[in-house]
Length: 201
Image (cartoon, rainbow, N blue to C red):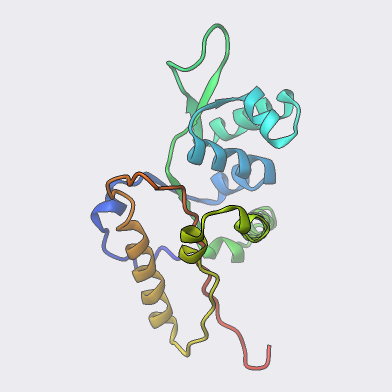
């Protein structure tokens, strides 16, 4: 989340297109359906408003509106060469989004509210993904069940040490991005949460 100090880029990170949120773009993105649609375009590739409407149980009018809003803020763009006829296909313009935690403390109430809504939706998505895995783990081969992880750790760190740890975890994850695809490869979601707490909380 923090932008300063920035960790040195690894080769994998250097190839990623990451959008750093500012107050304006955050306000354009901080909507549950927009965030989920953008994630779907990043994970699954280009789609039409109709396809996204079917995926999320919304009307195509609603998904079309939110796609135009995402486009106005530079998160999506036309994806030529897909479909046929008058279908309009959309694609994500970046691989990921970087959140600046200072937006939570913005003096502008609208920006601060958007930051809180953005983070709340991220945590909701993480919880839903974990619940979906726990509910369906029995349908996966034993190799995948053994390769999954649900762990937590408690450390005593300074802010600088915590920042260093987060950067090193990100570097490690990003180093796996461009590995040759194995025959048994699947999409794997990695969640990282790091935050301080007072004793007794």
